[in-house]
Length: 474
Ligand code: MN
Ligand code: MN
Image 1 (cartoon, rainbow, N blue to C red):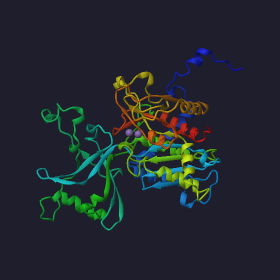
Image 2 (cartoon, protein in one colour):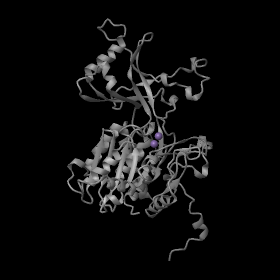
Image 3 (cartoon, rainbow, N blue to C red):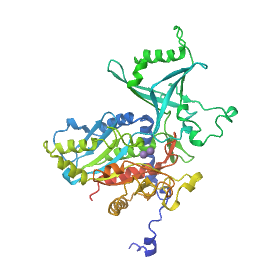
């Protein structure tokens, strides 16, 4: 007969511990296996467009069909659709009608980075070096982006209307780019007394491109011409084409194991591709759910969720409408609203894990720790919970039960001490659709930096949490 827990042990049940203190050998293998997959994914998905491309490949391999190719609603059918090459929605159709609600996990695929300006290319007259001017995207600490290898990824619409994709700096033989900081020998007057936020300014984030002049032309800007000639020869681009392009400059290179024990992952773009990957990958394991399971990946979260590829666009409603039409081509609008209202949602986004060197920005009893499992974040925002979706006790209760029943290790945490700072997610925009929603995702150290740190144990925890949530019957 099993020993009955003492009431004291029950009362102390919130005492959590690191996943590494409780896993079996078999679970360690699962952790390594899903983490390897994830590391391959983020190494090849450096922009929101690349994320979309990788997901379409994965989904098709796992038997998902584009919604245009799906005839009628049948439970277990696997469908996907995309939006402007930047959003992905995928679903496994449930036994219950969609009006009764879906289980939705929504993440974002955009990450902080440097975008090229619309007229980016210049040659410095004194040094004869060619550079790109950039405009940073999202919340970066600018000084972190100098003196590291960078790659460039772009989509360009040429003057004849053709669209081309350009990727330079990830392949083994590819060159990389960089932003040059000032040498310490000469930085005392110019830079040493600047505040950290201005250590490198936005207008100083210029990307080094070339130093050799074009041979034949008479122009003064010979190095700039060399670059333009190269782009023209290789891609058919002319200078004006930058106006109709989106180029993103990001840290070059693959995700790496971190630590003697290889228990952590260092990579760019883990906010929020760690959630995008685990939520979509978990969906591919769902067979025939009771309620329809949906994974949604949106863009533009890092700049406030505006624009037609953000969570604020009507793409979510379009997805629901297309799914409902599989059952009834004349499905009325009120059915879409009902389906959205009855949906239970996880806003899958990362939280900030405690960095042992900067512990005092956190209140330790309510801070997320690396390797302690997926973090339930009841509210985000700043100050007095401004701009936050504050999940209800009832919904927290439901999610907690789902995770406990599935034996998924989890923790709770808020982003820093009260009044220390703050941040938002897409949760409040899902809540505008009248969904129950809570934020849940792994916690990262060095969030928004060129090398964010996650725990492999948290990748595994998030993956299992989303799997359990998709199968949930509320
Ligand atoms: Mn995020
Ligand atoms: Mn972020």
